[in-house]
Every structure is written in C-alpha cells, then in structure tokens.
Length: 436
Image 1: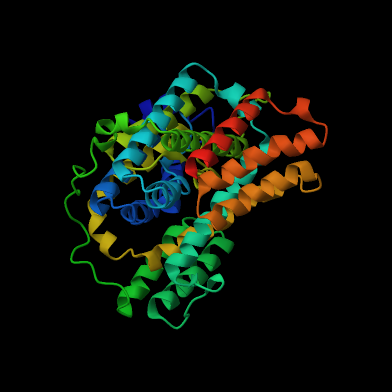
Image 2: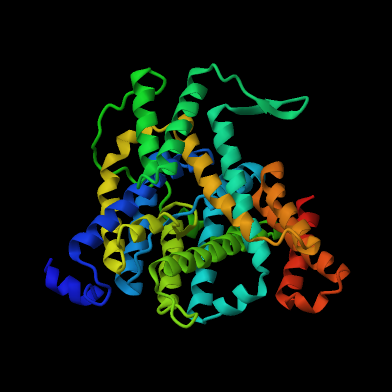
C-alpha cells in the first residue's frame, strides 16, 4: 500500500500526523479494546450461543464497522459489540425473558435496520433532543453498575443468599482469588494510565491462572478461524418472531441503548480530538452509518449490537487523528480471528476484572446528573438502581421513563417534556403490563 496515497486520502498533513503516528494510535486502541474478543463470546455463550462462532462474529462485526468508520467517515473511532448490550442480550432477553437467542438476534437485526433508516433520513437530531440528557446519563451509568455486578458474580465475590438475596462469597476459593488478583492488577494498570490496561490485566490474570492451574492450558495459540455457521443467518430466519409486545420493547431497548451510547461516545472522542467546529461535527451521518451498518452485519453473522468504543480515546491520546487509525484497528481484529484457542483460557474468573473496571468507567456518567433537582434525580436514580437490582437493563430504563414525566408534571414542568417522552411513557407502561 502506497504511503503517499494513504497520507493524501486521510489528510495526514492537515492533522499534522504521520503514517507511524496513526499506526501506533491504531495499535493502542486495539490493545485497549482487544478484551472484547474474549469477553463477548463468554457472555453470549451463557445465552446458549456457540462460543467459537461468536468469537469469529465479534471479530467480523468489529472489523467491518471500524473499517467503514475509518475509510468512509475518516474518524479514529473503533466499533465493536457493546458492553452492556451484550449483557442485556444474554441475561435480560434470553435468560430473564426466556427468548431463544435466535429470536433475540432477530431483534438486534430489526433494531439495526431501524437505526440505519433513521440515520439515512436524518432523524437522529430530533430523537436525541427529545430524550432528557439526565436519563441518557443514568442509563449509561446503570448499565455500568449492572456490568460490574455481573463481573462480581462471575468472580464469585458476590453470591446468592436466600436470606439477604446476595452476600459476600467465599474469597478463599482459587477462582475467586484469581479474580481478586486480576482486579488488583487491572486497577493498578488503569490508574497508572497504561494504554491497553484492561487487556493487559486480562492477559496477566490468564497467565497467573495457568501457572497455578486454576484455568486449563490451551492446546494451541494459533489455529484456523472458528466457523461462524452455528450463528450465521439465524437472525434473518427468525425475524418473523418479532410480533409480541415483549419483543417490540426488546427492539426499542436495543435501539435506545445503542443509539445514545454511540452518539455520546462519538461526541466525547470528537471533542477530545478537536473535531467539533461551531458546535457541529463534520461527517456525523457517515459515522452513524458505520455503527448502524455494523449492528446489521453483526446480527447477521451472530453477535449482539455494536457501538462506538470509548477506548478509542486511548488511540486519540496516542496521536490518532484520522481514519487510518481505525483502519489499523480493523486489520488487527481480522488477524485476531486466528487466536481462538485462547478462548479456553478465558473463563468468567478471567473476564470478571475487565467487567468491573468497564463498569467503573461507565458509572462516570453519574457526575453529569443534576442531583439537586428531585424531579430529575428520582427518575435517574431509579434508572440506575433498577438495572442491577432487577437484573434487567430494560426494567431500569422503563422505570426512568415512567417516573420522569410524572415527576416533571408534579413540579409544574409539563412543557419541558418532549412529546416523544410521553409516547415512551405509554410504551413502557404497556411493557410492564405485558411483562406481568
């Protein structure tokens, strides 16, 4: 590949960057988010999906979305199956609601298609402006706490208790001790701002697990790419299953979470890189197209919804300013497909520290909520605590959207609530009626 052509296409001189700088930035982003290759299959396998197939689907969806983001939108932003939506997919939709994973994938596909359509018809701004900022932040923070709870449960640090619902587990168990070790290592790495700290923490924990024989040794390091056949096309063949209120709400929730997570992440990273001019972000439609099309492709090959990754900020901090950073990330995920044997090493005890730290990062959205105004604080709080306590992202979101218009009306601020929020109010009331 001609470096001069690459420099011209991506505008290296305009952004005062270089081939080497962009490559280093891409590698930094890849290392920061490579954990998703192993964490996503582990979570979705709990839904009954083939772990090897999900591993390959994760790599394909990530590579596709990130390459489109880099080549078409020309932003140094990576896309991969979202943490939070994969947990919602498995623990709320499949396990909690008893919906087959094939039907749940069909829900992801429908949500992706809707996301694609509202992107093409430029309805994004209208919808974003309709949803209160506080509820967006509360949803993000609630998902983070929910993910951390799953991590603590997977580590054995938190266990079920018939008297108190949950309690502290047996910390002397080898698997739990391994997770605690991994959590401490990961905490040290991320606090010290080590690029790819979560990924390195996962690797160090896995090595320690193999040394002390807590996890099995892999038979190989590199092998052929696992077949995606067990999940390929399942979403398309079950799309006619989307006909009940429960499944419609599932689709709406997928759409809501991915839509706002993507918008928030793109704005945050664009601000960090200095792309926003006059309160506008160039090529935002192309960026949203990359994410929505990636969700469609991911559903077709067999993974939960994709979203833009906040870990992209690590690459931006390393100097990434153009889409070539994303191209490097996409290529690295394609190479990553050949390392599937390592999946046997990555158990729930290994991934638990990553889930807990990701939860911490997502909970940072709480700082942007105005806790001094009870009409805002109460629905935001119920959204946050509703997710981990009900073990359902959808329930937390539903609680927030039901209480928000009520609290605003009581405060005399009916006109401050967008009509779309009232529509969602009715939808989530129906959700609880049909759920019961």
